Image (cartoon, rainbow, N blue to C red; front, side):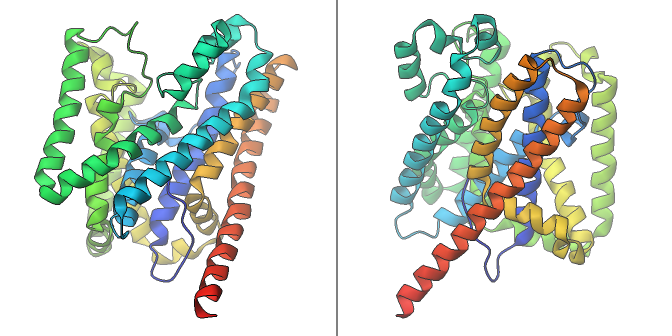
Length: 369
């Protein structure tokens, strides 16, 4: 989650991809939270409904890419990355503080459904587990995952400086080890409670980080602009994945849970997420004027302020879901909550993007003064 401001020479299409992922996350959060309280009716369909990767996968990939593209250029990348990790850590704590009033009014069953039972059983011990990045209530674990990745990024940069192949090898090796540990039962799920196993998910962060250091998007967009048939091929592939998901073809494969596992980043998820991103890149390359449209500009704004947008969507998800349940539910109210979450996400992006622009303008003025 790298905050950025618009500027000359900036690739807006990357911001659009991040913004789209953020909007999908906001919708998915509301749907999943309301399903905790037995939402009666189908959830609002999103790209996550038509494949084996969630918007979180796309978000992690794009965030890793941005880290490689932005921090590699810093005079002291290690110090900059660690400062960012500290900031994310503080924000995760503030987010816990913000949702604590909602958690405090929940009975035991409800807290368990939100994965916050560890805080209910023993607040002091639970807080220590949270601060140690070992446990988190639902939705707050994503920020913890980012903190862990940012803390490990200096090591990844060190490996990259010695050999890009070495970095990829270590990343792939950790992912394979995670799959092996799950397949063999080496890790007991009752003990290891990661919703996002960092050893597996790191491949979605550090391999894209490597690509970000090389600004691979420039070649990708140029290739897709010159070869439009590739976007058609990607569309067919995405459609095939969607059909397989809707028909639940994976259930006919032994140990299919290993292939589709979100927490351990199963093979189908590992394959599907990059294909989806490539498809989105193809669509944005098909017509360059599309990028200048109002909806795309709104998505780009959200994509530049993903940290604040994410925090806002988590808080409003807790508040709206708890209120919705206590008010008696209702499908129309659920749809209203989805719309409100999207509008809030956009509003937060506009506010913080304007603030970032003012800050940038003041810095330039100070330099020239």
